[in-house]
Length: 255
Image: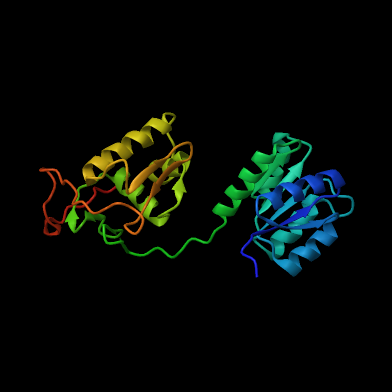
């Protein structure tokens, strides 16, 4: 049995088939190929791929028809391929249930980046627990309490939402865009600096350094490393105007 994720390519042009198969195989994907829509639907039903790359201009049943059928029976992620990059086509594809839309010609790097982004978004979200705790950080999502090594720390609503986003995806890199969406809802125009300075203040408040457990991943975003992989042995420097014990019961103000 393989741990590779399977991608089904439904594309009738032989040279593009070959290109897609080669690029995906080199990036450790298991690849299936269909040259028409009917065959693609059949392969999808038999093999349950993790993602489908679907060309719009197929010879028998076109990509729109294939997408309509797929969406009637499955939530498999679908990236549409087309030679037309008009807004109307993009809106039609996304409105019909496609997860992304890629216009030919495209670069190999863009293709792989889009596929990986869609696969990440399609991962099931675990049931949200009322309390997160990893031995260093504890977050009570109901009472809106944050504590480090058992000491309650006063945080703002934005800081609370940032911490919640990090712990939901512990060990994974979150982009600036993902953090903006999680903490601010409607991303401000100065998003890069907004996230950077908020994390700087949050680290200082929690007594953490740049080396962890919230670490910057250059060019990608930020990651929260739980104690098993982060250097978290030092007791945090809780500021004088913050409570010295969990008995203080300080909460994050409501958003």
